[in-house]
Length: 151
Length: 85
Image (cartoon, rainbow over the protein chains, first blue to last red):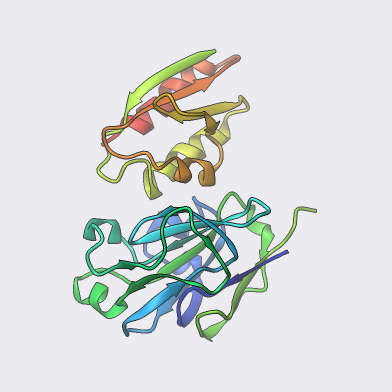
C-alpha cells in the first residue's frame, strides 16, 4: 500500500470533474484532483522516491517499489512554457514525501484564463487500486488516497 | 520484428494527451510493443509511466517495435498517433 499525499492545499475533488478528458476519463490512470487554494504556494511530492520527470507544470515521482505518481499543476499549463513556475529540485533528485518540488501561484494561472486544478494520478494503476479518497478541504501533506497492492 | 521510425510533431511532444492516446492504443493489442527514443533503450509502450519518462519532445524520432500477428497494422496505428500534430 502506498499512501499518496496531497501535493497542494485546497479542496479534494474526483478526477472525473477535471475539465480535460485525459484526466477525467482516466486515460493516464486513476487518482484524485485538488482545486488549489488561490494563493502563491508550493507543490510537494506526494510520495517518497525519485523525480524521474520534472517539467515546470508537471512532475512524475517514482517510489522504490516502481510506482509512479503524476502531479499536474493546472490544465493546459504546458502552454505557459514554465512562466510562473519555479523548480525547487532537479530532475533525478531523490525526494521525501512532502518535500517541495515546484513553487507556483494558482491565482496567477487562473488570471491567465486557465484552470489551476491539480490532477494527482497513479500511473499504470487499475481503477480499483485507488481507495480511501480524501473528501473536502485538504492541507498539503494530508493523505489524498491509498494505492493498494495488487491482489 | 517489425518497426517504425516516426518523428514526433506534436507541440508538447509525447506527453499528457498524445502519450495517453498512444499507450491506450498499445494496451489494446495482445502483442508486446516497445518504444524507444532514437537509439535509446526500448521501454514498454503499454506503460504510461515509461512513456512519460522517455520525455519525447517535438522533433524527436521514436522507434516503435512489435512482433507477431498483426504487428504491421498495430505499428501503422501507433505511428499515426505518434506522428499526429
